[in-house]
Amino acid sequence: MSGEESPPERRRSLVAYSGKRERARCGYCRSSRGKVSSGMWAHSMTVQDYQDLIDRGWRRSGKYVYKPVMNETCCPQYTIRCRALNFHPSKSHKKVLKKVVKFLTKGEISKKDDEVEPMDSHLEDTDGCSFLSKDEPNASQDELAPLYTDHKEQVESEEEGRKGEITVDSRHMESCNEKANTNSSKPLESAKVGHAVPKPGKGADLNKPPCRKAKDIRRELKLQRNLQNQAQAPTLEAEILLGQNSKPKTNQPKSIEDFIFASLPSEAVHQLEVRLVPASLEDPQFKSSFTQSATLFAKYQMAIHKDTPAECNEHQFTRFLCDSPLEAENPSNGPDCGYGSFHQQYWLDGRIIAVGVIDILPKCVSSVYLYYDPVYSFLSLGVYSALREIAFTRKLHEKASDLSYYYMGFYIHSCPKMRYKGRYRPSDLLCPETYVWVPIEQCLSSLEQSKYCRFNQDLKADDEEKLKELGRVRVLHKRTVMPYSVYKRRRKGQNDEESVQQYAALVGQTCSERMLLFRS
Image 1: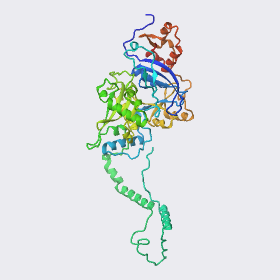
Image 2: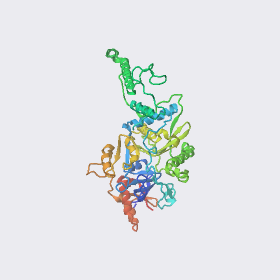
Image 3: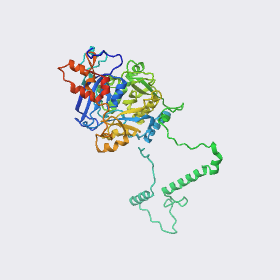
């Protein structure tokens, strides 16, 4: 056997490591040479491998999987997850949910957008997510069939404002009256004190009650309301007589499900339907809605990100948001929809107004991207879709008990507009050195002091998946799977140990032994 193995029948991830990419443009701080990351092309990937990779700080854009070099990049990007089962919506979150319900029920349109969170809340590098073309590894179509892809791929990419309440300030009114009297062309005659009878049309009307200050009126109205409430409140004796029949007052806060899944009245103005479809042109429902979805993507990109038509055509849409390395899986102990990449389409009155691209993995729902019709910006669809995805995570948990987290991508504390993700609580940040999860509340003080932080306070703790045996890394060479130690003996003239070691350290020992690293 000479240490060789035949390609196993079970699914394997196949990747080609493309190395470290330095001096790239950053969409957060606008630095033209500050972004540093490592990446690899995933020709195929199991959902378990991708779950393990994002738990080590990786993230995908299309079929390109990348990991920021945290201690070198200008804006460190920390993986953030929300503990969906314990999530409680904030006041601003509920405000968005109520706004959508009012629009669906009555057609009410908010005149001002109270929501301060970015609408494109699911996108890293929101204003400059660089879809840069890179060459794939040199490989023949026969060698990677049927996993071969194009030579070029796209790359990585509360308070409510006060309403116009008019208050009366008596001092301001008196000041205005004085100015009016001063500037009038005909000065008013000074009234004689005492017995003088005012001329018709001049002075105060004695038949009307005297003017009162606005604050006195408000104070009196408040007193009347309090007296009315006291009169309507049941007496102590009445409470005792009611006894067991009286229902105790409950003030339990509403959950997101109470808003999202509440039945709309029959006379509702609009109907909203959210459809989950696999991100695959082989799926009939996805294929039938492809043109409409791609058109909406182009409309969003040109309006929000100022893309040119060529930068957001159907080809770009396909390789950025439709192509996925994840192999669909449907185990018996998984959710009914299975695992893989999906589009959640928001259909309003029969047409798509928003699409949330998500990955459903063994432990989480991972948000990939959101695009929407800018006409409906007033609905704060970025926030609304995130809340729906949290509710969806909870629903999936009922069938798949391990699936209980909602991954929101990266948290960038050095970029103030990206801090909103920390408001979806309780949430955790991933320690960039030991890859353990730490509650975000424990991380914020450190991030205020330094962009790059180790969150694990145990200084003796280390990465449990750190590379231990380079020779055990699995490689694919000439359609044969073998350990790297065997490959190295066969390729004595090739010195790629540094690259392989860098790859294995980034993916961890377990993934490096389970995934296949393509070598030409």
